[in-house]
Image 1 (tube, one colour):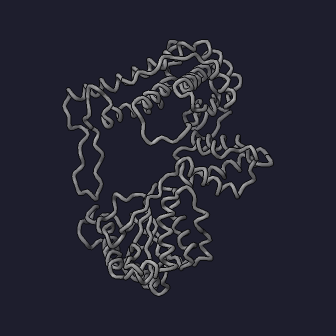
Image 2 (image 1 turned 180 degrees about the vertical axis):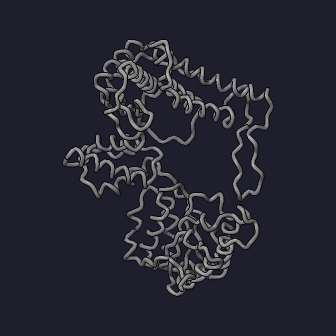
Image 3 (image 1 turned 120 degrees about the vertical axis):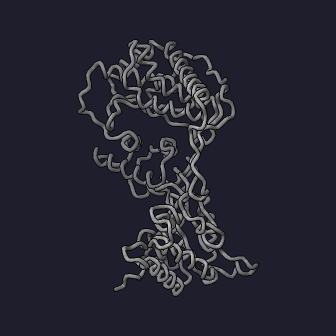
Length: 474
């Protein structure tokens, strides 16, 4: 019946069609995997000093970062058979079938050695045992996992079979999979930094007609947090935008429009908005922009718009950061709070009234101050105590920590500290807008007419800003 036969697709080098030249933005992961290619091509170089390549390499990283792509690139570079299968394909309704498929897969790989076995979405197969409704060892998934562990123990890496696997949930994998002698090397395939994003864009723009004025460095700066898959989608969306307007090439405006489409949602020019509401939105967005330009003069405001997008957004402001940040100081977080609360401050300053328009800003600001007080130890009245414990993973085999292991007196201090940070940031935003009140009104009136301000217009407005008192860092 062929039930126990593996469903793995055998892809030889000519069919993978992927090399390391097609993989960009993950230089560290590529360097690790180049060793695998060298071993498959010249194993005697490693064996000369008694070394052997790790039996298994686990590719770990968020979805869309290119884990599957880089595994196929290894096979393409090494020119060896590539056995690709998803972890979920082992599991069937018939007990014992998954284990039989594991045995069959390894037998095929050994007969084609040197070869690469690639198991995608390993967490579907390798979830920690004892977690779930069936705690014993007779579950089909557990039998399949046990067989995989046995096969990984039973073969000699000198044969030339290397196991690659990918997962975006390493915390739920069984500890036995991760011990030395099985998946003994983990390779992080993370979201790319600014330089990496630019390299990825260079790979994808080969497929489109690009205008000479497009600066990929600017596009990379606007796409903080994007994965390789996100950037591929961005380039495609930009090409669609250019096609829609019957353009000859994809321009920078197409890329900006595509980013807005992905981040903020679809433009809704036909949505009827009350003129009074639109006036409030214009002041709200200009409040964000003016405060952002004051506290971060080095960062460019790419666009300010009062055109509705997505489900709830009535306007938006896009700021282009000068560089990726990994460590955030207390001062930097306070600046972010001031920018987030500037929309509410503008509404209160001009209309002496507040609306529901700042609800999303307040959620983001509250999350920041909660982390400042409960995780980062930035509140003087709380001190260095970290109260927001992260949940332990399955591998720790420990009970979850409670967030509420402190009394009402400490809870009151926490709330007071959080409110203090928010009040200080709101006061700072109000102070900036008060000193630029006339400019705020003029810009909001013009924004109502033009609907959108571009980068050049925002640079012109920046030159008219009055300097404000420096943000207190204590």
